[in-house]
Length: 89
Image (cartoon, rainbow, N blue to C red; front, side, top):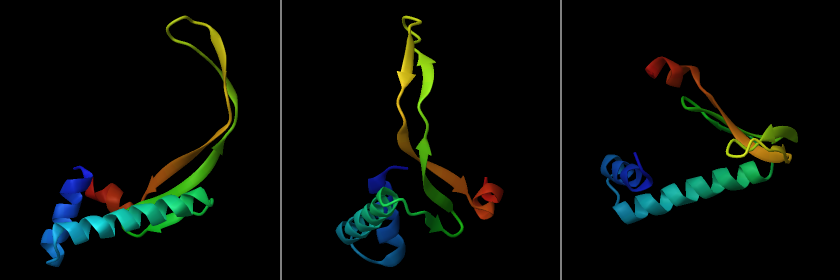
């Protein structure tokens, strides 16, 4: 499912236009992004938790050349699914 499909499903279930549903979806996604950018966890009951994490620098290699490289430290997002989501799958 892609973002327009999700907006269409929201519009269908809530009796609002696709445009309004798309704007609401964009707002929700923007707020989730902003929360993660400020190192806040985002909990979506029934779905799971999105949490920012710090990944340490590590050694790796270039698979094309076999050359050793250093992968720098960076931020990432982890998703931990809720029990209800795990059971639904």
